[in-house]
Length: 448
Image (cartoon, rainbow, N blue to C red; front, side):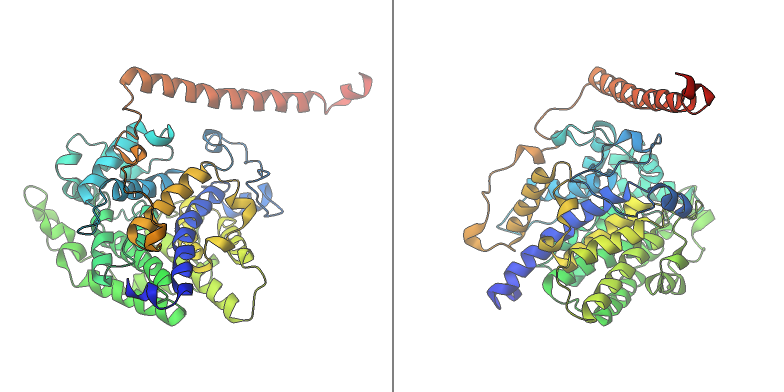
């Protein structure tokens, strides 16, 4: 961490960028929820102004998916990234440096899929298909990577969704004082507890390294991005257990998979990492919207756009860059919250927390709680100056049960009942409003 002492400005900038990465990702997630799963045409029809606010909340499109949320909420993307932060803080050990334990991450994800975020008393919302198949298996905790591998093989090695990429950006903050090799290894370990496809692994490695590099002042231009693109690929490609996880298979599944070519193909990786426009990525393609390379590509492309905008001349504020690029991204629809979460981490690190749009950041639900956790994280990582560092006392929020205890079955059932009731009441209210409009639109309205 010697780079932080080069000049006081370096440390304050690193602080701003580290906080910006995590808050920026949460904002991308929250804003992306407005258009998640929608085709681009529907995004334009529903939000013709393409302007969003969380302080004076822009109303959601009224549908069964968004009925589960309140404007300003984040989704499963941020929840799972928080599991990494809470694990790091809970096991913090300054004497030997804290390294995330993949087994603890697996345990926390396993608890989250049923209990939700206990520290915030939030149910789990938006559990991805792969996450569900892997984590809900009874034997998952015995061998998380092994179970993830079995699930992947049953998809004929086709499934490469974005569910691990969406959670790994905090590692870029945690690894800011570690080597690039250690950063890649941490990203691979944390990602593979649910997603073993090498495309998922290399995406996690690259995104994490970009966050780390931006905070350290090592990623300053597109050439630096391009170098990390190569380094991440080469690192995964050189490790057969990552490049060809199917070759680790033993037993009855082994014969069907051991001789197949790796899913890690350089041309496919390059094509996405060097995409020129959002339109060429076809983000709202319903068959492939959750593909991990699409998500990675949007994040890299948005970072490139931000660099180009700033290099073209001085920009008065800076919050416009973040807001403009995230808005353009989500208006293309598809898996908008995850795309914007990944892009928000890179853009947030690039512009810094101080330049995030206030009318988004101040309207984020649980904002103060999240900020406190992020500030504690950067303190423990060592980005804050020693005299500013937080207490080393264990925060009860970081416990597996969030300091609240685990919900019993009857309590889980009641929460589910109340949640479904809330959604049904929203839908009933909507139907009644539509009926009133329908009755008031005919000739009868003139004779009342």
